[in-house]
Image 1 (cartoon, helix red, strand yellow):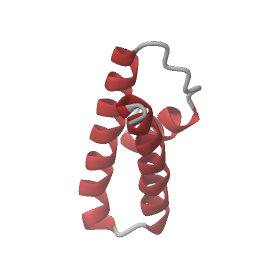
Image 2 (cartoon, one colour; image 1 turned 180 degrees about the vertical axis):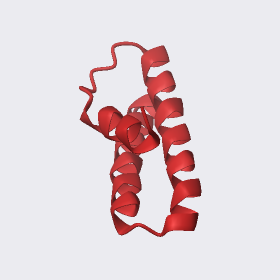
Image 3 (cartoon, one colour; image 1 turned 45 degrees about the vertical axis):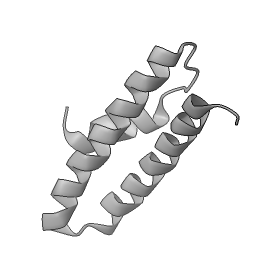
Image 4 (cartoon, one colour; image 1 turned 135 degrees about the vertical axis):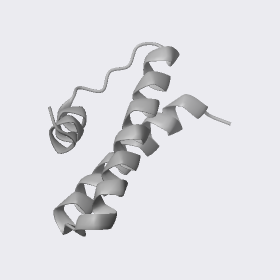
Length: 71
């Protein structure tokens, strides 16, 4: 399974993380996907890849907001 397929699969996953450890693992996974996509993007400059990274970043921010909790 290549990088873009893994990223799309992660994006289409149902996000119902029951435990904090599930959220932490998901956050780490999406972070690594974004960094890998960024390395490929640097050489290819594909606008579709940038859009995918932006969508994954939005998902990551939602997960991290849930991790931090309310002040």
